[in-house]
Amino acid sequence: MSKEKVVLAYSGGLDTSVCIKWLQNELGLDVIAMLGNVGQEHDGLEKIADKARSLGCIAVEVVDMTDEFADEYLTRAIAANAMYENKYPLLSALSRPLISAHLVDVAHKYGATCVAHGCTGKGNDQVRFETSIATLDPSLKVLAPVREWDLGMRPDEIAYAKAHGVPVAQSIEKPYSIDDNLWGRAIEAGVLEDPWNEPPADIWTMTVDPALAPDEAAYVEIGFTAGVPTSLDGERLSVAELVAKLNVIAGANGYGRIDMIENRYVGLKSRECYEVPAGLALIAAHKALEDLCLERDVLHYKLSLEQTWADQVYNGRWFSPLKEALDAFMADTQAALTGVVKLKFYKGSCVVVGRKSAAALYDQSLATYDNDDAFDQKAAKGFIDIQGLSLKTWATKKAEVASATAAAALKLDVVMGSAEPVLADAVNY
Ligand code: ARG
Image 1 (cartoon, rainbow, N blue to C red):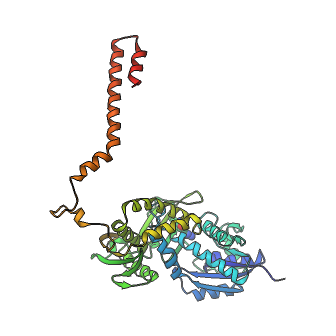
Image 2 (image 1 turned 90 degrees about the vertical axis):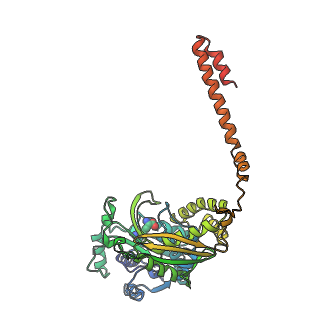
Image 3 (image 1 turned 90 degrees about the horizontal axis):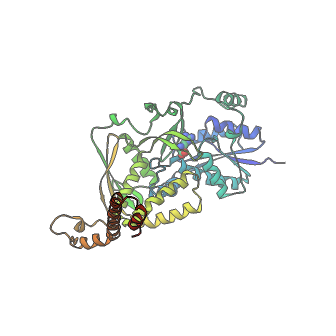
C-alpha cells in the first residue's frame, strides 16, 4: 500500500528539517517539501531544495511567489493602508495566506491528503496557515509537528536531529526568531523578550542606524496608478522591483524601524521589532495621495474599514468573505488615485513633502487666502447657523433648566417646609 502524502512548508532551517524526519518516522508519511520564495534572505533556494531531497523528501517544489506577493498581496495592503494596531504593516500576516494557497496547489498536484507547517503553538502564523488552508480546501488535514512533538526544549530537538541525520549547524544558538520577506523583517525573542531592553544593533539588517545615515537628505518620487505604486523617480517598475529598490533607499537613510508591544491573536502580548522601510514609506505616500484625491466622507469611512481589514488579515482571515468585500470597497476608492508623491528621507525620518494628481480634489482657488478667492465667505454664516441649530437649541434649554433649578433651590431655602411642591414646579417644565 502506498503511503499517504504530506506537503510541508519548508524553510531549510532546523525546525522544518526535523519536521521532515518526524513526519516520515512518527507518522509514516511521504513528504513533499515546498519552498516558497517571497523575497526573503536566503543563501540559495537550490541549496535548500537539495537539503530537503537529502532528507528523503519524495519531491521538492520551489515556487517563486515574489511577483504574486507584490501584485496580489502588497497592492491590497497598500490600498488598505494596512497597519495592525496602527503600527505593524502585517508583513508575516501577508505572506502566510499566499504560502498556504501554494501548499494547497502542491497538495492537489501530488494527491496529498495532508499539509504541514513548522509553526509553534504560541504564535499567529499557525492560525493564518490553518485558517487559510481550511478555507481553500476544507478536506485537507493540517499537521503542525512542532506543536505536537514531545521534543520539548531545543537540546531534545537537536538530539532528535542528530539521531535522524539532520545536519545541525555549528552556531546553533539562534538569538532571535526572524521572519522576513519582500515587505520587511520581523525580529522577536532572545533579549527582546524584556520590553525594557533597547534592541541591540545587530538585529537590524535592512536599515542603518539613523545616526550613521547620510547628512544629505534623499528625495524620491513615487508614481501611483489607480492606487498601485508603478514608478520610482519616473522609472516604471513592477511592484516587486519598486519595493526592493525603495527598501534600499529608505534603509540607507535609517528609515523603517518599529519597536512595539503587540496583541497577538492567541491572547498574549509580545514585543516585536520590525524593519519595513519601503512598506512604511509607500503607505505614507499612498495616504498623502488619498488625502489629496478622496472625497471627504469616503476618506473618513475608509479609515474605519482599514482597521477591520488589518484585523482580518492579522487574524488569518485573508480568504474570508468580509475581507474580500472590504477589498472591493478599497478597490472602488482607488480607481482615480493616480498621481505622484514626493518623499524626503533624512536620518531615520520619511516625510511627504509634495503631492500632485490630475484627480486632486484640492482646489487652490477655494483654499487660497489671496484676492482671487472663489470661496463665498459670507455664505459660511448661514451654514454655521443651521448646522449648529440643534446644539444652540439644546444649550438654550439647558441654561433655562439650570436657572429654574437654582431659583427653586432659593425658594426652598426661604419657604422652609414646602420643599415638595416647589421642587415639582422646578422640574415639571
Ligand atoms: N508578530 C508578527 C505577526 O504575528 C510577526 C511574526 C513573525 N514570525 C516569526 N516567526 N518571527 O505577524
